[in-house]
Length: 216
Image 1 (spheres, rainbow, N blue to C red):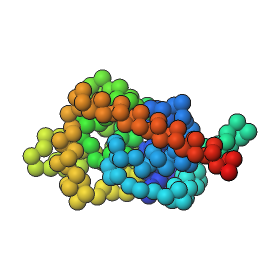
Image 2 (image 1 turned 90 degrees about the vertical axis):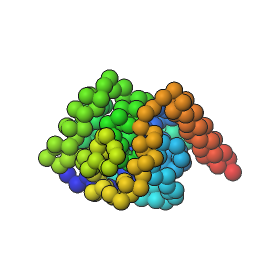
Image 3 (image 1 turned 180 degrees about the horizontal axis):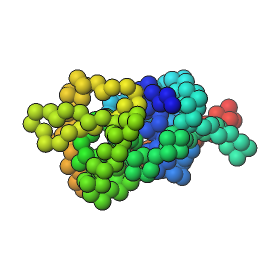
């Protein structure tokens, strides 16, 4: 199976997985809500700006690969989209959580993955994270890769391989910031909750805008 994706397709899949778990009341996502999720500034590395036309093109490609589906019907004001990536690849909840974080945040250490997957899957230990990383990396077609340890760091970082090999130079540039954020604490958890509320507000704004357009 050809599972290679471009950067926008990766961002779309990661965003759909994240919102399915964190804001199920707004899932599946409308095109506008998906755009907001892809372009949000929190919990994203890198931060990007996608146009609706780019997301529509990405969704078309993802639907061809059976990684996403489009929902329409009398009960929906606008078409909505959900991911079937996890079903098509038969991923477990643990594997899904790890891949989503790597897709949305770039290269991560096992400690960072454990700290940043809490709303997707609650890993009980680093050993459990390591087991999933090993399973994803030893497949016939590996989904992730371990990067060489950088000078001055204690942990290797991992990247997903759905958009080809890792950009090593980019990973080096981002390593200092990533390491500074490696140890989650109460403040980071609070930021996560605030960002979730902001995302829900963006979704509501998008739904209201789509509803308003029907009467113009």
